[in-house]
Image (cartoon, rainbow, N blue to C red; front, side):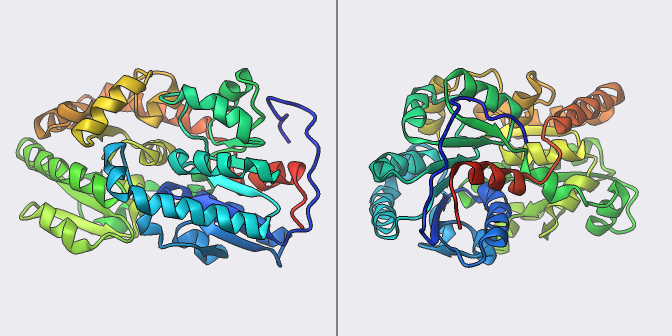
Length: 392
């Protein structure tokens, strides 16, 4: 196993507790959380796993405190209407942890809630493990001190994050990116494409507006408008939107209107893998698209107040994870006011028509893929936890 970065010499915590508390509020953490729960239950079949998590985590054995859709809030200002809900949820989570005294508390991303939870329970001397780092290296370096004080182990999914935390004397382990496990058995591009469009010799553009209703409402309308412009310039193109699980398809249909865009639910990897190009919201989807080596245009739109706050906090030249991991801008980013239909169409058409640039982007994306690890992220994460605490 890789060497643990940060503070050395941790003692393994012995516990007779028959439970683990896991907190994952973001939809993108659902699959990594599932992989980890699978490994935990394989090693400790009688252990109780409770807390917060999505449908995949629940299918794997998590007893959820609340419906996952209640947790998917994006942005600074947008969380205000649910302030009292999250305050009650935090209080309830602390009470459960105090009563159960689990062998460990495992936090996945979701820093606004999870770091508050960690601070509230630190005095209980229960090991606190963070899996999937908050992006403190981009916007929240003030939280590094909090993480160093309350987190016993930080498990990260990008190599540069391990280096970052090591510099700040935080016990960190790179365990690999779960996207490798999720898509390593995907079929060839032609097979993916055949599942999405039938008997078409046209180019295929996939639209990935996100997994939360908030971001879909902001991203999809401008994507649809852009497809109309692209279609006028390049009529031999099929468009398909990836509908996220849990989102009412009628909402997507209303946004699409009369535009000739296909809707597929449950075929996101096939859309990414079979497309000639993807127009995607910023986030985990950019890493998924990079894994397939599919060229992309990244857009990001949020509430104006949230944007103004974020632009003062973010210290990076890029916001797309694919560009951050690459260490340079290898795919175009259109942010907030730049993310209009005309600009999206211009970038898309230019990329499809410039074959040298298109091929160079594929080459750069495959280099990003090499940085995601060799797979078995869930097993590696479990082994890192098992070095710190005896779960069963």
